[in-house]
Image (cartoon, rainbow over all chains, first blue to last red; front, side):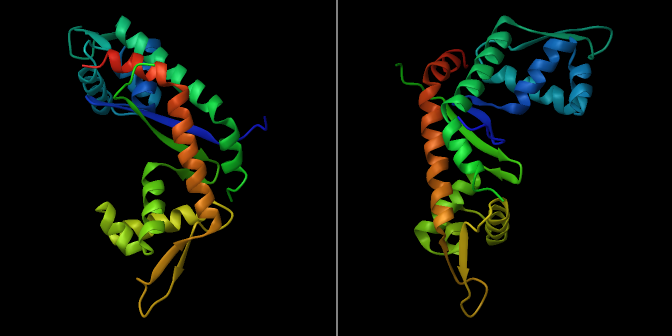
Length: 114
Length: 114
């Protein structure tokens, strides 16, 4: 299979909301850093936006994806729930498998780019 | 395979630019209506935005995707070039095949939505 520089960016559209690359990156960064504010800094995102995206993804699924722990202020720690770990894992599988499944078409479209 | 209400929204990221659902819908509508302004109306999009998206997708690929024909004003007819037809066809294949390839994971993520 020819290697292509083309990649897929995938968003999952559910009846209750959406989950795509931005939320996936934030979820991964929260898991790695243990806080929403540190995750926001890692991604070059404002704290307000990271907080909003976190609340938004918590609302898409039956259970929360992120648990927050109050410190002395609202910027305490955060961690992924088992549901959060699962959603991130499934999203990564979808991304990898979808890209593999269409490798030939991606190479074809890459061949006609400018 | 369980049917799921979850769907993929796919954008292709190339080194020269991006091609996703918005541009694909516009390309399809231009092919169907024969003009950028009619396509814009069909999609509930402003003419300015449709024009900008068309110029943008023409710049991503080596050859134009859309040819425009001057009438008495700049809102003359438009049609897909062979490259435009090909890009749309490949994009549709990618969407269909990717979604089929991850049907099981889509059903799994749909099962934990709210």
